[in-house]
Length: 436
Image (tube, rainbow, N blue to C red; front, side, top):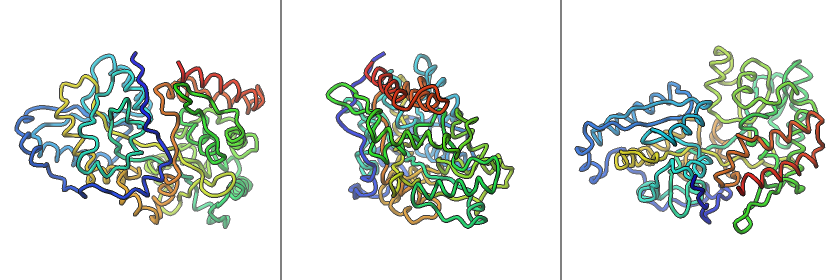
């Protein structure tokens, strides 16, 4: 396995995405440039394999049909589209890395360093910053840039906010929480009225760090910091420890049921749809699933979002997530794949991808316009303070495979370790994984 050295480009606070002025040539119409049009006949009769991640839904299916039709119109090539359900993504990528993969794939931004280190992605530096893409803020390319080469283009940004039962809030005359104490009070008031409900759901599953990180970052904590060429864990420092205490306190203080310690967002969503959760941290893409799981009972004015309050007041930082689009390593259709990426990440199609997929747009003017939107405003506000996990190929092992922090939290909640010991042990394990 080739482990690459991450470039000095850092993934900083995503407020830059709101503040940077666009300096590109402006929006391009969804038609090919002269050079692309001229190359069209050369691709006639060819087929491009494209992977999308997750389960399809009507809006996403329509978007892909129209994007692919435009691509065929411009290039003459056909698209073979395959949807990869989230639980299967890791296995599919692993198999494709040693065998046959797609030509182009959607990919989580924090997954880029890991798969690049395994030669699973081709560099696309030559197209990543041209045309409309010159407007995408440079800091959004932190995960995507390795050894001064760019391996993916940001397609849609991800931030988390609190999804809540607006109908319950209205019924019990609860105001939108502005502080963490407000949120705890709201959760307990709902629990007093509705037995067996998690006031605020604890996430201890595969995406647990999205919630833990928000608490830790709001206290000034960090997971690990690169010092020279070595990662130094920061889990035992006061800021992270304070956030960790808030996180485990969701269960030990009774806001969330101890029986659900290993549930991730997917499980929580199902319980939310069945009237077992009042609030949890997630993104807008859960709404369609909730409507389906609840058989149409939960939708519209019964639901709402608000930014997660920080423990000390204000808005908690959100995980700087998002989805990219990349060229798969070893593709025999590199030129055609680049044409697809160029089309999909142009402003017209990228804005649609984000808006119709429950993500935030990567183009600054479109993102800024969403601040006052009732549905997307909470996510835009959270994204303004967004941060990232350690940009290292081995982070996924610590986060998902070894579940370092999830295991530490479970040990504390179950009384097997005190918080100081659990964090010290986790810090040692995190350093070993990141520095291997």
